[in-house]
Image 1 (tube, rainbow, N blue to C red):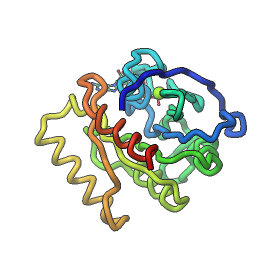
Image 2 (spheres, rainbow, N blue to C red):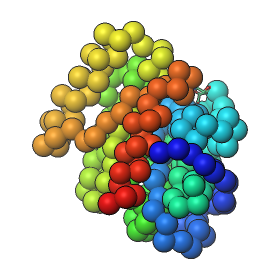
Image 3 (tube, protein in one colour):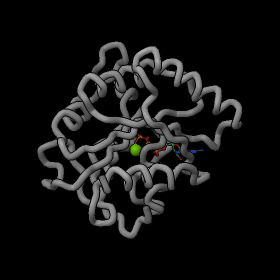
Length: 197
Ligand code: GTP
Ligand code: MG
């Protein structure tokens, strides 16, 4: 898919104030600082569309972007940083869970995982929560530029093993780097294929 236009639409913390639109939407979610906003800028080829920061907790609201005038891309705040989201309590920020509960036009959530780390309980619990709530999701392993190929492969294999303890199969997954522009075609083509169905 070629990105012909990418426009900011609205930011808010209330699901009922999200755009009143039937357009399909795709949400980017994951731990704070995993690279959600940077990935959105890389995917859309717009350097400053979504606000990024080296400090975790930059994105605080639900941000809608209209892409090619026919689908929405959504940048969400990170989980696992604020005190409200202790992994053991399954308390992800309330409006994140409300978003996934209520937003029926949400077609697929992309759960971003930092490719440098071992599987983390909060990510596993978040994906388990998505599964229990019938929210379709894929995984994107981010910051691949920071890893040597062998180590990257080992970490992804580890993840696969851990996921297979919970699910029958590994969800669809992608490898990305915002700095090295890796994963752009694969992720956009995946979205394109679903939009065409
Ligand atoms: P919150 O909005 O705070 O939840 O963070 P986020 O997940 O949106 O992360 P953001 O895109 O703001 O990036 C966090 C930091 O990681 C920034 O310093 C980025 O420059 C850096 N970063 C993001 N993606 C990549 C990547 O692919 N490679 C490298 N090397 N750094 C990255
Ligand atoms: Mg962000």
